[in-house]
Length: 447
Image 1 (cartoon, rainbow, N blue to C red):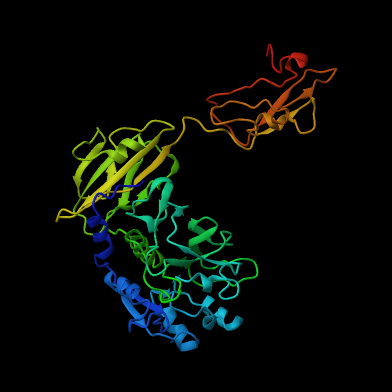
Image 2: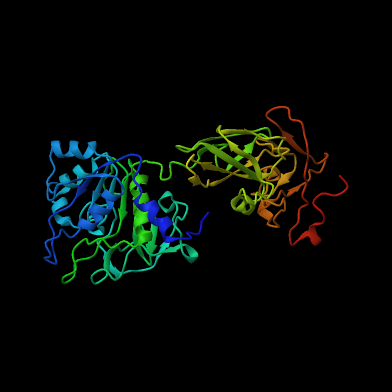
């Protein structure tokens, strides 16, 4: 669900408010002053992270050669951010050094696609890096937590980097096949934001990271007087990066919002007498509960226009008992809005679940017959769901149906063996319908 950001001030408020947990972040960087202005090229990026309330450990050039003491320090941090202001060759002098970085258990955000190449840290099996000027990007996973509170453009596009900073170039990974990773944002055939899980090889033949890894391409490509790694995120890019920092540390991006729904979001076969439960947001004094069968209505409902869906208003507890039994096989949507005593409102995500059906399709049925069945069209086709669709319609493909020839000297039969006793609610029978029906006749008639 996307929400319109009405005022830019709202977005800035998200960016600049202090976080509840001041993280210890190690900033991996080197001394670069490409434009010779006496200011470190990536200083603005450092200052932005500090403005979020995090503690930053900056020791320029300290991490080009690792030892046991340095690895222990990296593992003790909450997060590692590798700046664009780095010489990638100095962090991958041989396989042993690459293995040292893989062994670090702390999650890591890497700003430079040069380090991700297969000639450096082997995060992606390519040497291609493309330098682009402020490209429009495609968000492939708009539901990803790093887009919390971010207003995406039409067709889930986003502008993360500013093409007017210096000569405007940002370096992107020139491929989308990222092995065990997931491309979150791309532009053309270039990956902009990618994440890799801990414990899985980046790709066949590459190393395995001991902690989660993210490539977040940002910071200028040095060109002429343009600095290497000058901070070039747009306001939207800042919001996404701020979220990415919290996400990689496992922090709740919006701790005031209700979470951990019970039933789980998207749950199926939920009992009709279910009791709703959730984890209340931090510092929330009261909560409103919206519940209904329309996603659009539950999303749009508010205290001013409850639309008959505000089933509980101003409650303190994190649970709600529904007044009546729910319908069978119905999808329901619900939302919890939280309110701090000072007036701050946290609009909840819309969750859903589907109740149990009136009856379940019986499984593990053994079908046999005394007829001579065609190969690939045996009696099991009558009970294994072949050819069925969600509307209980059936295909006209011969391979989805049973076809057999009756024995000459005895009655023709098909038999079903069940694994236990069932109460039969409904039996559906589909006729044998193919293009040769006019020749073969009805599959079932006068039964």
